[in-house]
Length: 148
Image (cartoon, rainbow, N blue to C red; front, side, top):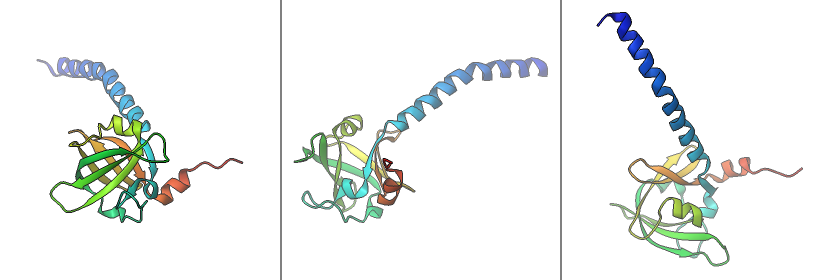
């Protein structure tokens, strides 16, 4: 096959792939924009009673969901008890019901905590799709809008 014909075929194949690439990129961006978030101090705790002084730097890796319960006094919020897979580490993650449903957070499920510059990303599935961001308090405070 002559070089010019190969280049033409390659150009047509690339042009045909662009719309699906753009759709995929837009879908990925829109998915990340819909992730729920809250401050680490509101989201992580060492026990079901305390609301946080947890050293968030330790939340990294896979965690099995032990149980999930309603949070008294916080309508629409759930508290999941997470136990590290292969390590002795356990904490509670408080998150909106919608985020828990999106991440399929239920007893027996495994969620992955990943450190990010802005806090901790919680994700599920082989593709590690984020469903909740526990934002470092400083980041969350900077993002909070103030009415003038």
